[in-house]
Amino acid sequence: METYKCESCGMAVNASCAKCNEPLINGHISLDNGDKVQVSSCPKCEGKIKSPQCCGSDMNCSL
Image (cartoon, rainbow, N blue to C red; front, side, top):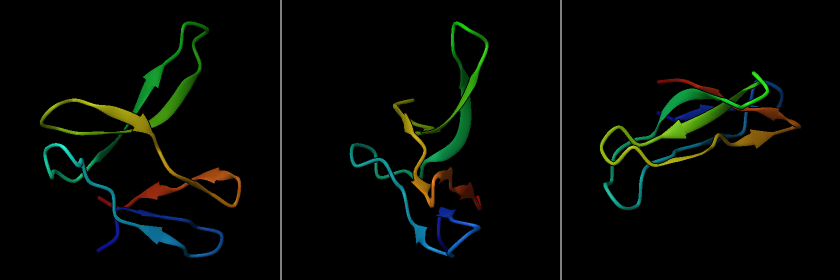
């Protein structure tokens, strides 16, 4: 099963941490100005990346 899927075109990706081999989980971080940014994070090492985008929008997490 895919980790993230684009609602517009159906493109999907699997995302896991290369360091820990754990599936990434969807989340958000708050910026200093109060805006929220969707991120993918490793539940083991707590590393974070910007969540994938497709068709100009954040892809949805299916986990």
